[in-house]
Length: 148
Image 1 (spheres, one colour):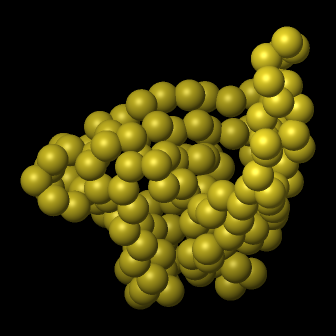
Image 2 (cartoon, rainbow, N blue to C red; image 1 turned 120 degrees about the vertical axis):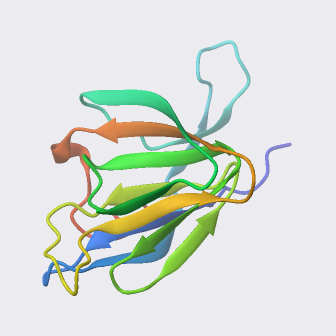
């Protein structure tokens, strides 16, 4: 028996009209129950994002902190192990661990008080291993929670 349609939460790092980065809790809710490849049993499948993508795994060493910067491209970031944080220009700091999801869409920020984009870094005494999927600019939403 299939359960109700799922909702998967993620953090969206985005830039407002004044060039300031913010973070908002969002949810992926567009799921259809269907087989990935028949005759496999149906599963809940989310919306597909198509277009050029770059896939990588990155390892942030213990104690690593990235100075203020923008994401190089709109990108999904999924911690595989360890913990990390993201701090936006508005002062919001989000800490995430394995299996949590973040979308980095803070391109086109303007410097305010020595801050531009976000800071990020590891938490704790183990490296943070992150899965990163960078999207083509045209694949990214222009407002927070645009993936639905």
